[in-house]
Length: 465
Image 1 (tube, one colour):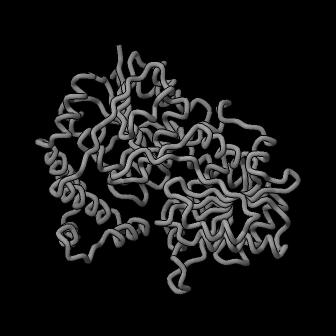
Image 2: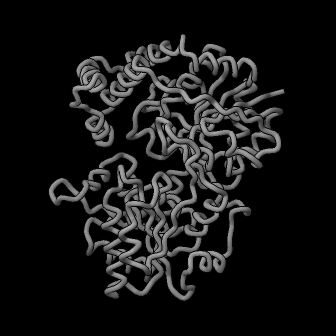
Image 3: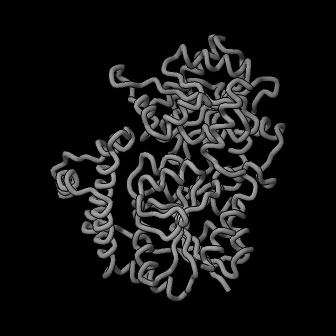
């Protein structure tokens, strides 16, 4: 008898591991399944006939834990900043000039870690972070839950959120095997340290495995398995497919025209989206590109408020505001509490399958559209001297350097390049198709079909070891 615990940390993890086939496969491969949810339990209603749902008490980080986590994260960035612009950029962004207690503490961590940032030092900081949970009330509650459930393996669907660290600590003390899925394509090459250490790791591709071993030198290759990602699995599952006719009817699109989709990032990193939408809309009005349907999908991490003026100014733009409900207020990471509906997954798949061209500011949506071999343009107009938000700096991030070098998308750094690229792809959609195929294989190392099955099978193997 084998029992798995699955930790769902946020709405994206909910989409990837509950609205894919993973939950079904986990229930097939394990005798018992327990979901430890950082989301309200109600979101799982009707989605499982077998899994037990346990809603975790929200963990609020105290100063001492925050301090040791912060010094661990800054040390990680200090260690890997050489020849890595993304790490350097995040290191600079984390610096604080505030006179608050946390601001001054952050300043001290920069001074200290400029000298003491080896992997051994990072492990010491991680130990101090974990030790800070020892007397925490919520940690004790987590420990009791894990004792009562007696799972053989605890699977974390995201490796980074700070609020999972006490659960990792509880599992360590109870000697429960832990596994982490590396959440996204950019998480290793440019982001902060993981929340803690795990026994095993699931990654998208051989590339991600090499990145993991580069940034976390104490992890052994035999503790890593390449499985692909369930993020794109709904694109090959019949329950999420809709017809082209239904898609055009739902959004009011003209079936005789080609369709351009602009997909937004959230405002924290994609501040120029309104400009890009305006330029495309004005080009349509001026007939500098052929008459097309133009649909915009906003980020599920935010509401539609910042686009209100564009909705009024350009009535011919079709809008897809993701159907993600905010399930809890007051959480330390509010965006994580937004959860998608099944209907939204269908809408997203239809957009990707039936639109002719995608435009975005270097987001993962480039990979989404490549699953259906659709051409992609990445817009980056801002730099350090033209007054726009400097999104061109992302071109130096390691995972984006791979995009640029692959020639799988067209990078538009100004209006003329954008309009030219749009016309090229509308006239010749197979342009760069081979580059897209090769880049997709680099990033998503396994076929989409049976991704969840591969993950469940590997977790069962590790649970038996």
